[in-house]
Image (tube, rainbow, N blue to C red; front, side, top):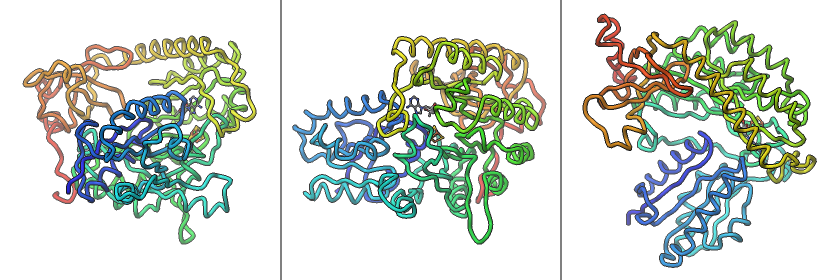
Length: 481
Ligand code: 5AD
Ligand code: SF4
């Protein structure tokens, strides 16, 4: 009998990828993906624990299913991902009608666990060992990476894909729950990564984004050889069909000259680096245990500017971390002015159980102060972004067309003059008029206007010579070339 699965995903790109894998595996077990709870016989939430707010949203969504489950007791409800690992049995206590709780390291078992629950096997719990629950090797093995299958239909576009190169994190920043939920840092074997990239290229993928919590710390030791991110980039760069390579998220201390030099030599490597600074104050960075100073970060920025002039750098900031004074917050503001980030993600500090900060440092910055600092930092970043976007006016940039813009989708537009959206090599969003046929192509677009978050332009092909028109012709796909 066919089954119907509905999956809701919150959180980071890692979760988006995990959901893609779970759906691919369920399809192999005869499931079809549906887009509403009502159509589904299996309802899954792939969850995030990085901030309290993300968890509240999931618990509230689960609360709304209480009635649904009473009416349809045969439906299976599952909680997957980071919150499953963090809260474990607590989820069954708070929502007794949940049938399965599956951590990020056990996702490969999802189909089987659903079957067991459906067959009357009761509640299913599959999670990894905690970071203090045994010998390191055993803990590592309990966090298994799950990357055997790809499901192109789950991706936002068929020509863009995430590729995991690393799981877990060993940095133990004092505020962060990730080392607990995703376990020890482990690099995937390079041959697996390359094989997956070739498969993606065969499926028509043009842009691959390599994923890791600290992606540039990637290392894989085997047979006396160490493979680093730079080596992977070189190998991936040669795969026919792959036209853009990105990697997120970077850790400042591992942004080496060697890596930057390698990127400089690889034209298909994106000139965009997301390297979270988190705070502009050395005292706060120390109490976050980030492992670098503001001076180290400045040196890294200088290295980036030297090796990759014109590269876009973006950051994350946490405002209102334990004991953050107004002066320390102003130091974060100062770093936004100084580093001129392309964009910044700003988060109000959220205390996470199980972290060092929750154990040792009081969450003492009032909520309204956090909110005000959040708005102030975002407003400053917007002003910087808008000013820096001006440099693109009159310039022609290469854009990978992702699809109709959200506004166009909402208005139900189609045909000629459809508003399309895409990204430049340095990850700037560009909107311009076109037609649906252009989706998935890499096109030259001339910019005539901008806001803080968007460049606005027109396809340059019509005015340009034949060589630019040629650019808009899709390259043959790998494997078919
Ligand atoms: N509170 C607020 N923000 C956090 N982040 C991680 N943990 C927390 C927390 N406890 C932010 C960091 C990280 C991003 C993914 O989420 O800025 O870079
Ligand atoms: Fe969390 Fe720090 Fe690891 Fe990033 S580097 S995932 S913030 S512990």
